[in-house]
Image (cartoon, rainbow, N blue to C red; front, side, top):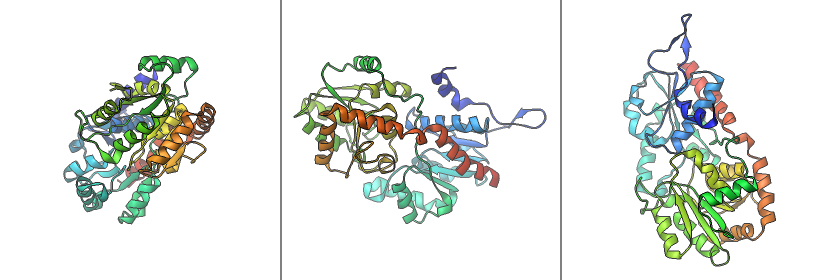
Length: 368
């Protein structure tokens, strides 16, 4: 079975079987990973985690979009935002784990309301999973008990995300319509509010800072911007206004993002707040140079000046300075790419899945 087929079927792996007759457990698996109906980041996290956990303990975990049907076992909400919606409807017989990626009251009134809701329902949560040390420290400050808090990074498939050969790189640039002799800067995140055209920017993702940086870089380099992801209207409109050439591809299949990385010379991550993002790990795995703000997993993963460059949030001048160093020096790009790729193995989903199994699912199942 191909990797693509394996990932597609991961959410439907067989249920755990019990008893001498080998009959399936009626009703549900011991672990239910709750995802959105959208085919987006949380769903792919769940597919990877369930796949790796089921390699350790066949049939233990499965995806679901119907948390109201879970009674008993473990419900893992792949995002704290789904937990806010569903926490009043979860059976008290069910152990609850949630992944809390990012968010603080200062991010705006909607996030402040969400944080209040999260803290008021903490008594219903058995494990809170965070992806980085920044958010771990923040939640401890909010009073989340240490025995409920587990830090497990987001993962990356290092067999899927690999550095390109020269031919692979050339094919990727052709696939995405990159003109010859252009330096390609990537941005692959969702940075607009909602699921529409994205004209209303999600400022915590830093789309305004991204535009400021590429506007400066375009003065000195022949850049081309490659975008993926939904709700990118604010950025595409800004690039049109600036006269910077770009391509925006909404990828129907997440696995198609690998060639998008292969087309790049540089990735910019300008967020003001993050849980990950995946791009930090995917850049390292594919050997793409990265300049990132000091948020989320960036400070845990990137060794500043060795495997990438880190800048303070909102420091566009530093972003441009480091990006220019990459764009103007192919040897520097190659050296840091090799160093970043060499350091990525601990973040492979195999290890991340086992951390979920050992530190979240197994203890909660044994307790119930």
